[in-house]
Amino acid sequence: MTRYLARRLLSMIPVLLGITLITFLVMQVVPGDPLQLMVDPKGRELDPETIRAIKAKWGLDLPVHLQYLRFLGNAVRGDLGFSYRFNRDVNITVLERIPATATLAIAAMLLAMIIGVTLGIASAVRHRTWFDVGSMVFALAGVSTPIFWLGLMMMYLFGVVWKVLPPSGYGTWRNLIMPSVALGLSSSGVLARLTRSSMLNVVRTEYITTARAKGLSERTVIYRHALKNALIPVITILGVQTGSLLSGAVVTETVFAWPGVGRLLMESIMNRDLPVIQGCVLLIATIFLFVNVIVDINYALIDPRIRYR
Image 1 (cartoon, helix red, strand yellow):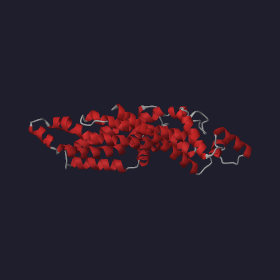
Image 2 (cartoon, helix red, strand yellow; image 1 turned 45 degrees about the vertical axis):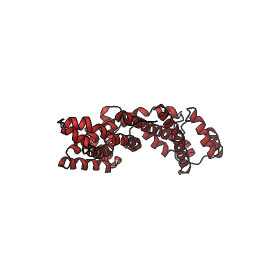
Image 3 (spheres, one colour; image 1 turned 135 degrees about the vertical axis):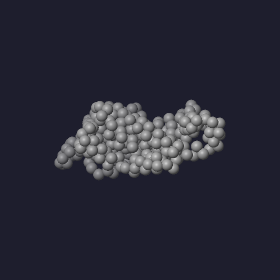
Image 4 (cartoon, one colour; image 1 turned 90 degrees about the vertical axis):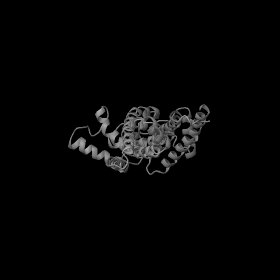
């Protein structure tokens, strides 16, 4: 296991390098001048001396490949540079937004797991009933509904019409309800469909038939024997859904004015604040890669037959 973890951690390095390179190159071709946004948002012309001074200060006078190498050299030392927009350390700018994003992502994932896994198990147990059909229709609606549309509708109904929840903002548990539901509903639909499919495959196997023939209760058969083996593909999709939650958080945080990393990333893209963009993308990619390593480790914990070398 130690050797396997070492290989996985080492394999993350080229992935992160590729992500930073792609992000850097994309931001070089995006329209808009960061100097104008940095100094004069109204777009008025700057004199040549001011332009040269600003470029020299931020290293923008260097060739593109040297700018990227300079970023990598600083990033290895833990220095992601300074924000063009905020004129402060990128590490501090990004890290102070992590608690809000972590709160939203964890709440959305817990909601998705509770709804998705519960519906999937219940649908498999009540296969080909009205409950099964209704659950899968709900799951399909969750997968198909755009996050931004669901967020706006919830804001309008619960925040404006009925006024039972704050339409936006951050600070209390009531502010968390709508963003977490909007973000977690899509993942719950995916988990429900996959859990149902996996459970149906497991309950048709011979060892489940043997367990029932022994006179075990249906609850024991389902939760003690079938569910554990059905969780392998569910755990796999949980790792994938983590990426969906992190990407969906960009939209959700923007819609609900949630002060997280996703909203910071969106604002930085609009202002072409490359250091902050690189910091946000690097953080999201690192979290996604580590989650997938944790998912692989959980395989061996759930199924003792799985061994890593």
